Amino acid sequence: MVINSIIKNSLKASFILSFLLLASCSGDNGNENGTNDSIPEIDSIPMHRAENAFYSIPSPIQIGQMLKRAGAGYDKKVLNPTENSSKYSSVNSKALNLGVYGADLSYSAIFNQPQEVMSYLTSSKKLAEELGITTSFSASVMEQMEKNTGNRDSLLFIISELFLSSNEALKENDQSHISVLVLAGGFIEGLYVGTHVAKTVKDNKGIYARIGELRGSLNNLIMLVSTVNESDVSGVLTDLRSIKAVYDESAVVEEKATTEVDTTKKVMTIGGKSNYNLSNEQIEKITSIVADIRAKIIKP
Image 1: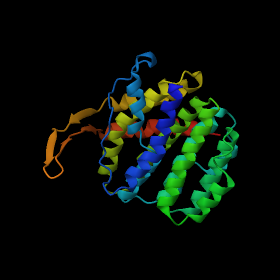
Image 2: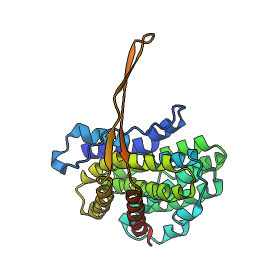
Image 3: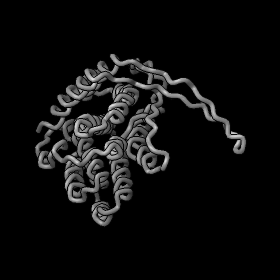
């Protein structure tokens, strides 16, 4: 099914492609693709747009890495307590919080917190198994995580593979809407952690600039959620659109296109990107709205 393929690629990009981008020496250039601010109806989405949308949805790994580069410290208090994992009863709450715990797991790994990594891994395993994902969090994977607690890059790669295999299991069981909820939960948690930890960083302009650039990513996430014909995701879609409404108030500044020619390699590079400038008031609005949405998600 085409939609299943789109969702599969979405999660693959969110947890694999972004990891590779972060591991490269090029750094985070903040460039976003597919940033059309209008969200079309499901039937009007050109398939090539939906298939490419996943490329600009950042994973929690990206957001965590951004915070670390900005000089932020690790703050366990902003994460969803692991003891909540046993309190979620509905399929939707389990799926959303699997995404939340995936974000918290990635954040803990980036800041080299081995004890928290194993704790959030255990919570993720519990929710995944309750959703019918019984093979992804195997004993061998858990052992591999334990052996690599001191190797951040290895941990991030294992986490990426872990969530990709979980998505594969959901797809095979015809549970695509759950995959979308996992992705949405991870995005919301990453944005929540980003907006709250940014307050603790003295020079947080770069963090807020990156949060502004998530406007295009949010649009693409909304597009993906819209492709799932499940009434169960309607509340999530409404919440995401409430964040989008604030982003839509901000100005979009297009940088002048630049052209560089490498005569040796005979390659021409055309640059330029869109800058999304959020005012302090808009940042506060987004911070507040995301906090409210996240509070609903993690409430047992």
